[in-house]
Image (cartoon, rainbow, N blue to C red; front, side, top):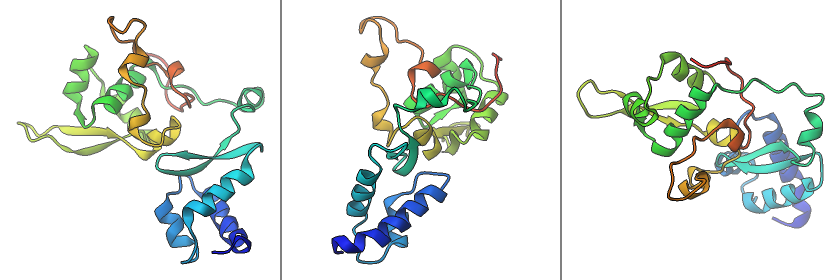
Length: 197
């Protein structure tokens, strides 16, 4: 594809990303753009075109999505109402699922050292952050839980390998791990019920 031919492909990719509620993958763009379009080249050009603007194109959740420019986010908090954050128990459970997936509810409870209510799992499901990933081949066949692409997008991650490493979550690398809190992850504003369980 010639440089002059980038404009129609860039416009189409831009429209697709703007209209999508989830990150747009290379596969989706490959099916949408002309056959001779190089998706990576089109997206590199489009990303460059948005540099320095109020919104940028970010690579998250295995695809591309528009995001507010990082330097403008603090200014927007004055006029944009932030959704309520997830309760601490939900954030703890989400962190356990993210790091140990696929994981059963019993395993989550063992790691947390406390019971996990169905309401907490329902809240994570409603927010599209976790999903069933099959059943464990043990008596009772408990549901296995894992994170979703929406989890990756919410926290600005492209894949699970970008989660902070254990050493990054410790005050003292030989001491106990810190609980992963909402304040320690990007994209912390989450809709959901407030208050502890």
